[in-house]
Length: 197
Image (cartoon, rainbow, N blue to C red):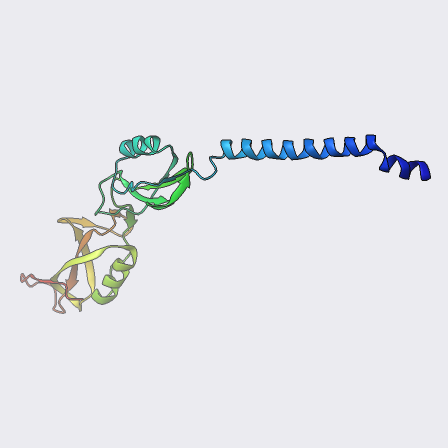
């Protein structure tokens, strides 16, 4: 035990210990310098505003800024943006990010997605309007025909053509409801009015 204590106090041990500590400090210093160089520590770029750019324009701007990108599809069409243009980006414009950071883009589709026309035949005009609105369709106008069921939907049209439940139409399409006016069939009078519901 005494020999071990004497060894710990010896000049040889103290020199070796000092050299080991110096080597550890040097390795840590070099590792930190390497990490700073490879991770661009303290070097940031400002994310450009890619809004409404085409995908091709976005790719060039992202490359020029030293950023990577990933394009995500969107199912929600926005008529205020050009087709196939950038709708959203993450991180947002103005954010400070490191070079080579990946930016996620959502692209505007070519048009509204199609929705299924609900079964509103033999449903009241008011309920039919609510059912259409629930799936993203609108009532453009209501045309009345001689049928006993007052305000009961007997048919529907889109752009002058008859449509039936289950048909697919682009979201926000305008529907014409053909409803009964409460009179016995046989009268030739047909009247039309704008929907006020």
